[in-house]
Length: 193
Image (cartoon, rainbow, N blue to C red):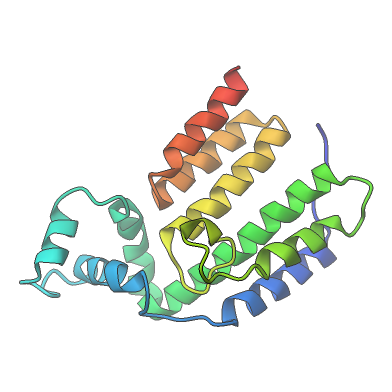
């Protein structure tokens, strides 16, 4: 299946939409960050909360987010954790909107505005009271939002029958959150029949 990429104008609109969606209620240090940030700060500074049992256990035993935090450490050292988390929240929103627009282009080929309307819909879904499944647009950076963007791109490549790209994208999503692996396995099973 062939499809054309998004135009420069469409990508520009997605950048603007992702910026508005990110700044619309963006927060740092709240919600899931209360669990994530101490672990990341410990990886940045071995003496951070040295006697905290939660941090000690989550940095010394299995933690599904630990691999992602190891990937983030060099970037956090470069720009700082608050700036990194803002950029990552924006990236989650942009890439979720982009994947949604690309899938919409395939599904509604005859509707020229379908990609942008689909992206607008995804970026304006209210977040409250939906639970974890509602993390399409994110107002904080969380690993599951990053994983969602990867899975949506994996679905796009599945629809295009571009198996290697699909596998690579889903593998990267598993770094963001290992619970993506069952989804990746199901998608690979669909490919293999």
